[in-house]
Length: 230
Image (cartoon, rainbow, N blue to C red; front, side):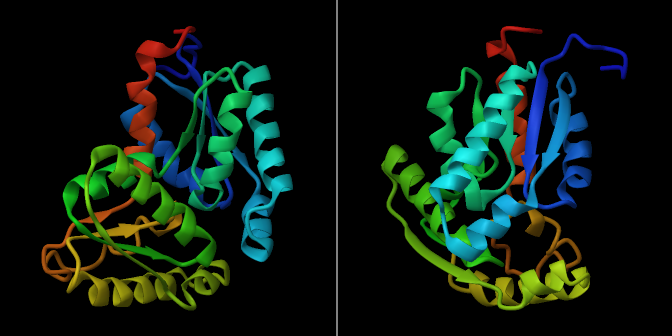
């Protein structure tokens, strides 16, 4: 779709990490080329969730973003933060457009891939929402599972402190430990997606690693037939 083409569906991509629009732009061009995305970044949504847990006011604020997006003519909202994924689900009944969790396809793929699933995050606030999503996906598919959840101490602080190499190193260390006893490894946050890119192909013993940006973005292309404005 050309820059001048305004016929494609408009998509609001809502982030809580300032670096993520640059991550998602190429994925949107590749996986949802007809979409006309615009990015909204509010880091305070994540900061409040990290500090205080899931608050009603945070869910209300996210619902406000969704309502503003719909009023602006958006055909869908893609929420890229797993920590506020439950708030995205709460916003769905209030909107007349799809509100997508970035991690939904990843959770479903994890359940299809193996029974022993390890979830790795850099924030405690992400673990419970991701684990709940995977358990619900397993229930929907009638699949049994053994679920392990863990964080990488210091990785979040390294990223926010401007040391992405240390962030990736800490995630890689924990991924190696977890891979030995699991069938599939889930990196719970979109900001973690590139952390293992530099590892040798056999570093995790062939255990598949799932991340959310690619599969989560692909949801938009799957919705094309349902959009009323094309």
